[in-house]
Amino acid sequence: MTAVLGQERALHVLREAMRHRHVSHAWIFHGPYGVGKFTAAAAFARLLLDPEATDESLARFDPPQGTETAQLVERGLHPDLHIIRRTLAAVSDNPTLRSKRLSNIPIDLLREFMIGGECGDGRFREAPVFKSAVMGHAKVFIVEESELLDFVGQNALLKTLEEPPAHTYIVLLTTRVDRLLPTIRSRCQRVPFARLDEDSMRRWMQRHRLALEGDAERWALALADGSPGTAVFAARHDLHRWAEELGPEFDRLAQGEYAPKLGDMLARRVDELAKALVKERESKASAPEDDEGEGESDAGTAAGDGQPRTKASKQSANHEAAGWLAAVLGHVARQRLHECVRKGHDPSFWLELVDLVGGAERAVHSNLNLKHVFANLVTQAADRAAMHRVGSAP
Image (tube, rainbow, N blue to C red; front, side):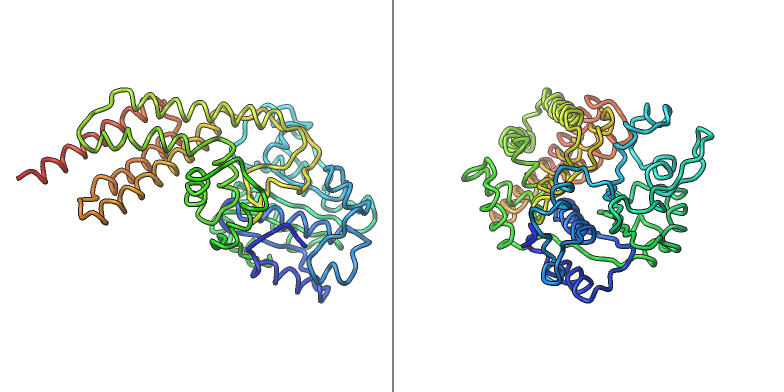
């Protein structure tokens, strides 16, 4: 059985396409972070690429094990499976592209590794998408974070989608399908992936045995909200400890005990996590991205592209780490809000804290200084707490 859990609607679409051997050349797998899009795409690719896939395995959406194709894909060495991600810039033959720390998928990267054409360095690249399959069966291109393709790149990709080569399949993965052009969406078969229900999440947790116990496991499940990828990340980076440390600090802030060092603590948490993310990604030469859960975990057995990663951007990692801090603080605030409602207390401070945290996250994305951003967050939160205390005074 495929490793994807809790995505019966998505798998039904793929099973039916396989069972009737009526497989579209272009697909969009869309849905929340960490719910199984990459794992499903990797299984899809194995079925399309493996000449030993039987009618039964196609109908069940269950790739055969132990075949030559399976071994090559698992090792990230299959010549007809192409995974397009921004980190391919590290192995570009364009020095300018290779030196960049990318926050998007530029047109030159797309031309070099997929669609071909004249690049910014004045050189013309042949299109891998139009070359014959090396192993003579099919070719599959999986584009991760396809929402990071800019307007020029999406328009360039459109021609390939309109006139696809024979036996070539393109799968766009995205958490933001609205950022893909309507003309892109209209030319692809769309497959929605949803957050897992509670039963599927618990089965996933039992199967994977994350290094969590008791309260930490319950907390990770609540934070994940149906995303195994989030649970994996929370366990790997001990985000429960963040909540245990930061929750009481904001409790004191809500009660008027201004914490002058809290801003530095928040900035330090983001900086430490960002550095850890950079180190992780620079050390992984050929594993797939670990930002997706399998619905199951996309961080699992799906193959990478066998290519080294680019030097990770600290700035980009800061953005991601700030997002995780916002998720943790947002979860803490929602817990406190529910407690206030249950006890009949005014929840206004916690409601406003959610907005303040969102503003701090946006400020980090604008590349403002971390210490300044979080010092301002704490100051604003203290001001709001004081306003609510004054407003509630007799």
